[in-house]
Image (cartoon, rainbow, N blue to C red; front, top):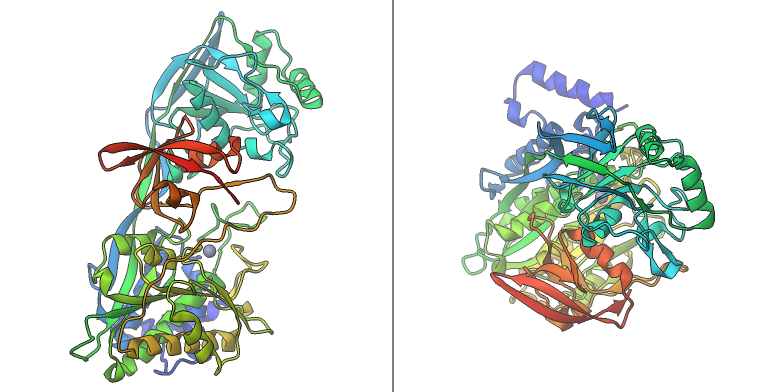
Length: 604
Ligand SMILES: [Zn+2]
């Protein structure tokens, strides 16, 4: 079915009437209609665009499509190069020349072959180390479970040989779940002074006896020490030389839930890791409908949506298939993108009636951590303090029979609720208001700059982040209805005498899963746009423990309760050892200064 598009496309090119760059702009009415929105949506979510993964060629085609439409609607370019605002993202890691692994135990030498018997992990540090080897079991210290692989060995200045998973195997929701990830283990052995880590899958675990494949995992920062993984087969040989039967040893650990760590006598390992981030340029697409009102034209209302999705899957995909598949992202977020296009066209047609100017933005890199919107607020092309309001549409294609529409950010201006209820009298949505200005999409970036925001969302579903999020499941008339609702809301704010006021909101710690471990809550909002050593904040939630302690946007947390924080993962894991109500020291870098703050941990 989706092939239809290719046929239409090659037909227009064959005619050669329209120039190449505008060949894809479909005929659309200036009014918002379901039919027009679906023209945009089916193209953006077509297999041809391969899921619009950030950094791919296909997302660039999508960007051009959006820009061509903006142009044909008469919008002015508002990027840094035409309609585009370019920024760089890290999309992967590659191996350099500097990778090696060797290991000696007494007279026995083990040589390793890259990608055959071992591989570095994607979040390894780029460095070389040598040291004695110590078997540190599963690399788990879990006080509340009465289990400690480090009770009888000290990994300080050594290279830790560590089993993947836990004594419960690879069970994702067991008692050991919080301690089982390789990220967590790397962070914990580094905090105990280890120089490097060698991971392997034990013979008593699952069928996967291979090393862990290199993955795009440096996104959250590297782990601060070199990490490799080796095959189970080589691991068994290593244990054999030390006079141990690995299978028997692991079975004992697993059945007794008992640590069996030990030092390898006369041992030495040399690890050298060289990884290079793969950087790609990507772009936001920004267009302006300029008001002709002499008093108000330099004030702006932003309507935005992210246009990237997960491409062929990978990180973020919830697909059960391990093969790459096109994640079309019809609802997430071709729906919001097509709504933005429809809104841009209609506002442009009504330009003469505008008080304030209207800005239309589609963001890249949202799925990688709101990168596009964060880039915009960091290097805005219009003054941020002249933005009166920002409306974000992300997943608005699945309006259900009950007409339930969730709106986030309703607490970010005292004007919002009355206005939403007033305009809703024409639509009869069952509105679900969430006051919080922070949330899982691009409006968060604007809210962090004290801009009133609203985020429209028809809810998550079983196709979320799966290849099955396709155009045939979109509620056409629902998409039109929501777009019109957003139009009415934006128009109302556009016509006001005074800009609406901004208010800060209290973030509600999310409801706890029944049975889940007690989680501590701090209220920090990560800044994923800059790679720094530590955990950088783009903001703190209002009324949160972080705010009360004096943490601020821009702070880089480098120590939490005495533990070094090198990346976001260290930060997350550092909480596992603490309880709500506890007071901990948090050291932040603020500019050149290092400041220690006392945070009383909250309850999530
Ligand atoms: Zn998504």
